[in-house]
Image (cartoon, rainbow, N blue to C red; front, side, top):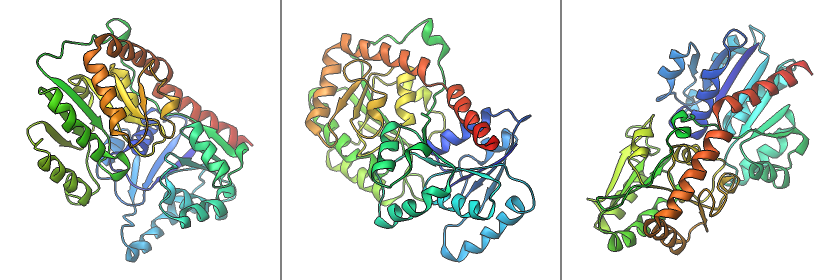
Length: 371
């Protein structure tokens, strides 16, 4: 079976990581795979190549580069493509356009975040093209509900497949033990540095934490949106200025993009996500799998992972007070942190494996290619 994946770009992010882990784990004896990146494959090209998968960069970063779309002709029109699987908004539009000409190919679109439709044009284009896709895969029930109720998708053509995570087999032998915080209290956030993540709120709240817990440290793992520098975009620079204004330069570390953040997570004590919107954040699953007590804003599909006061703490989006209270509660009540930690590890390591995600996708491929 020939599958061509189309994704808007291959920088470090949740959608990109999901696609890599899906492609990596597909049985190459059954599936012939190519990946098309509309913009660039800066971080993931080598990893896909190691899996024996061809990556085609269209580099459609500027309007005048649209001619590069001609690269698609030999891929789609000179060979039989069974499945076109697109991920993210612009890739979905291209996949649907191709489907109009390739009636014998199955088109599967992938939706992750749905709270970030930045323009009415995006919503309109989705409304008028969604029906072209044979099926749309969503990472959460929240996303599926949004697509049906706001963008007019047919619920029968929506399927929820949640993200996966690398299983930590040693958890079942030695679950994480919450240590004494006497030497340091390490707070960590993981994800792209973009306004969606509302890192201003995290930094401002951390400044209050620092006054009460002098040995507190904050590590922010992830890169910004600059094409030339991992931490050189406008939003990231504004966060640097905020850190300096709050006199936190010695207590806040920006690592830049990290492909394998496990070691940094293991050195941390609690994980925090303060996003305005989310699908199913990979970073949250990664933190849970390691056993970090987690605090997360109650947005998107987060509440489908975090069971409040059982395997983590949900807080109101934008509430510095809720965040401060949650951090202090975990710091001063190690037994609560331990309770969250164990239940988070148990859930992540038993419900969210990559193998489950891959199996769910291959079942979709078989179902629609045979119909």
